[in-house]
Length: 206
Image 1 (cartoon, one colour):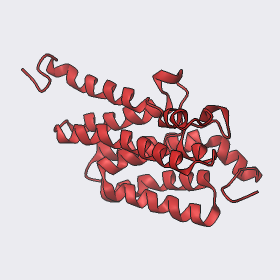
Image 2 (cartoon, rainbow, N blue to C red; image 1 turned 120 degrees about the horizontal axis):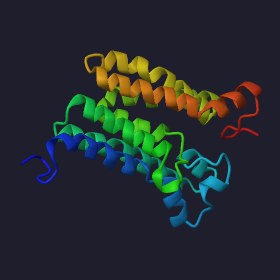
Image 3 (cartoon, rainbow, N blue to C red; image 1 turned 90 degrees about the horizontal axis):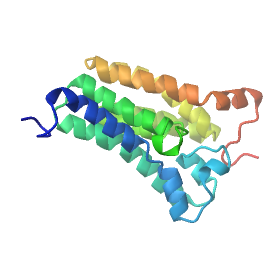
């Protein structure tokens, strides 16, 4: 007998990781936009399914719900894994699975978002201090530049630094944050090119 009763002990990590990926594949940007009667975010603006692109519809409440949904889906599987006393490497893999589920969702032909909010949710479960530091970085950079992409890239670049301070004793968690940071920057590569070319669109900027 084990935690799930009918599932062999050796398969429990696989079940957790697979379930986290399926949760991560839920695209709140698409679901919320549909509920509000808004255009599919994949067909407007940057084509991204995240809260920033949903906000361009002019419906702030839809963007807020999308943001909360994406953060929650990143936080919940990791928190549940921690509460269930999963091994450290399993918890780290659960966090990465839900993150990659958002990036490459099985429900939407593996075409997802950039993962900023979901990564924040994962970090919030692993270490609230890392999450708060990354969020503070995003807010400061965005307030100064008005570029959501630049704020996300900067926060992602500094997240491993914060994780080194707060999670250095938890190597698997630190590696999870590092991997997410690398992919976050990679997913923003087109934004980086636009920022360098001066063609990136920012909030409140023409």
